Amino acid sequence: MAMSTTKRKQMRGSKATAATGARKTGKGRGPGRGRASNPARSLVKDPVKGPIKGPVKGPVKGPVKGKGQLRREATEALLVEAFGRIVQRHGLRFVGVNEVVKEAGVGKALLYRYFGGLPGLVEAWGRENRIWPKLVDMVPLSGAPGATAAQVLKKIVVRNAQVHRDDPVRVEMLADELMTPTAISGALGEIRKQVGRDHAALFARNRDFRDHHLTMVVMMAAASYLAMRAVKAPRFMGEDLADAATWTRLMAEIEAIIERVVG
Image 1 (tube, rainbow, N blue to C red):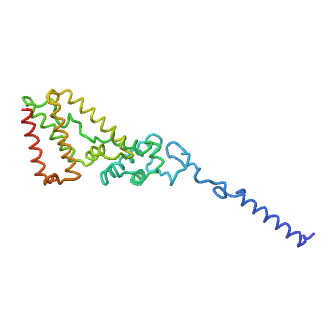
Image 2 (image 1 turned 180 degrees about the vertical axis):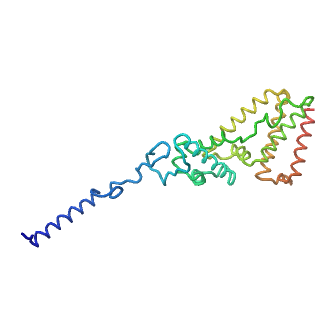
Image 3 (image 1 turned 45 degrees about the vertical axis):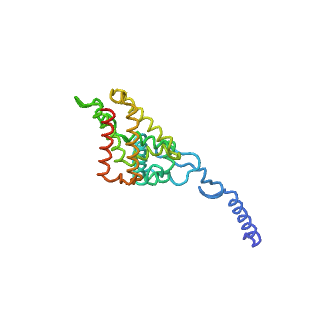
């Protein structure tokens, strides 16, 4: 029997009402559609350890191929290297998380997972890079056979000044201690402390340094300050500390002072 026109209209009305209800509740829709989906609480896949819970802005990128620990180590290396490149271009005090992950080509979530944040990355960068040459490599603290105390101490002071003047990153690490703290100042302080402990242990084994400790404190401070000025503000009392000839004359003057005091 043919269905009446009135019956067909009633059935169409019932279907339309059901569809409207489904849209409001999110039922009957495909994945990711309707109000049930909450992007802020979605799980993002970490290529090493699985999903990362919580809000994540932007995709977590996997910049390198590999599995497990090898992939993690490769990604950590990318982040450390990216941090170093930014430091060389812009300085230590102007490095941020966003700049690092963009430079490395990885997701921000991986930096926090592997390093806990920017301070942890700074500590890893300090371990990976020999920011200061080992003092035992810079100057033979035992001295050449027959070398006087003045000759040994002059080498230590002048070489210390030179390695700072030659590397703006070392200068920034020294200067950071005297400036308003930033997010990474604590990590930089730990690196400086470790360097200080290493140097103190080496100096303690050198009799000339022990016998003239206060003289060396004054001369090392003077040389370090001149090195910082040479990099950051080279004009000082009418002299251009960035000029090679001027720098040579200043180091000669420091040597002369040590010679007169130590003999």
